[in-house]
Length: 332
Ligand SMILES: NC(=O)c1ccc[n+]([C@@H]2O[C@H](COP(=O)([O-])OP(=O)(O)OC[C@H]3O[C@@H](n4cnc5c(N)ncnc54)[C@H](O)[C@@H]3O)[C@@H](O)[C@H]2O)c1
Image (cartoon, rainbow, N blue to C red):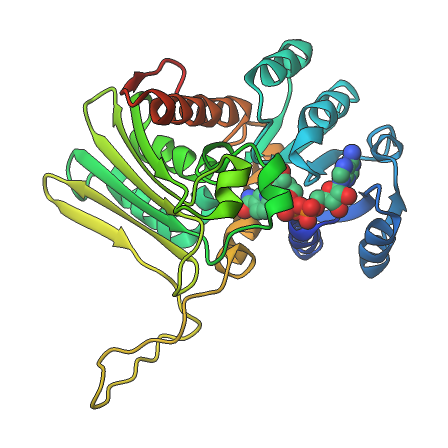
C-alpha cells in the first residue's frame, strides 16, 4: 500500500481523501491543515494521523507520496519540501499564480528526479477523455477546431476573488490545459472579458465573462467560453471538429430519463451541480493515474511542465485583455 500524506482538508482535500482510501492501493497516512478541526475531523474519518504542520507528514520516513490540496499560495513551498524529502507528489492546480515562483521551485527540484503530477482532473473526465482518445485515433481526421464551454453555476465569494489571481489563472487554467490536451502547443492567444458591471467583479478587478481564442502550431483553432455564473448550473461541454466530422461531449444530468409533455420535449433534470459532483469520477481516475505511473515507474501523463504551460496561456490572455492585441506565446 502506498502511504499518502494529504495536505489541505478543505473542499478538494476531502474529495482526494476519498479517492485515496477507495483506491485499494493506497492508504491515507496523514492529514495536515493549519485549521486543526479540519485536519482532525478528516483524519479521524479514515484513521489517519493529523497535524497542523505539513512538515510532520512530509518528513515522516514511512510516507511515500504527498497529495497537495492546500491553498494555492502554499503549493510551491510544499512541492519543494516534498520532492527534497524524496516523496512523489500530486499537486492541485494551479502550481502557483506567479511564474517566477514556479521557475524557482523547478530550479530547486529539477536535479532530484522529481515525480510531480498536476491535478488537471478534466483530462480524466470519462467523456472528455473518450473524445480525446477518438480524436487521437483519427476518427474526425485532422482536428481543426476545439470549442470549450466552461461556466460555473455561481461566482465565488468576493474574499476568494480577491486572492484567486483572477479568472484566467484560477478558473480558465483548466480550459487552457484542456486546449493543450487536445491541440498540443499553443502559439497565439487572444481574449476579451467583461465584469458585467457587477460591483463584486469591479472591486476585485476581475471578470464575469471571458472568451479566449487560440491557435496551435498546426493552425488549429480553439475557443474557450467562460462565465462565473450560469442559471442552469455547471455548464461543462466541449466539441472537437475535424475534416471528417465532430465529436461532442455534453453536460451530465443525474439520470438519462427524459420527459415529453405538451410544453416541452426531451426535458432533462438539472445538470450536475458543481465540480464535486460533475468531476467525481475524474478525481478518482486522476488518482488512479498517479498510482499507475508510480507502479509502472514512469512519468505521470500530466506534470509540472503542463502546469507551467497553462499559466503561460493565462498570462497571455491577461495581456491580450489589457492591450486588445493578439499575443504570441512560447512555452504554451
Ligand atoms: N481540480 C479541481 O477541480 C479543483 C477544485 C477546487 C479547488 N482546487 C484547488 O485546490 C486547492 C484548494 O482549494 P479548496 O477549494 O479545497 O480550498 P479550501 O479553502 O476549501 O481548502 C484549502 C485548505 O488548505 C488549508 N491550508 C492552508 N495552508 C496550508 C498548509 N500550509 N498546509 C496544509 N493545508 C493548508 C486551509 O486551511 C484549507 O483548509 C486550490 O489550489 C484550488 O485551486 C482544484
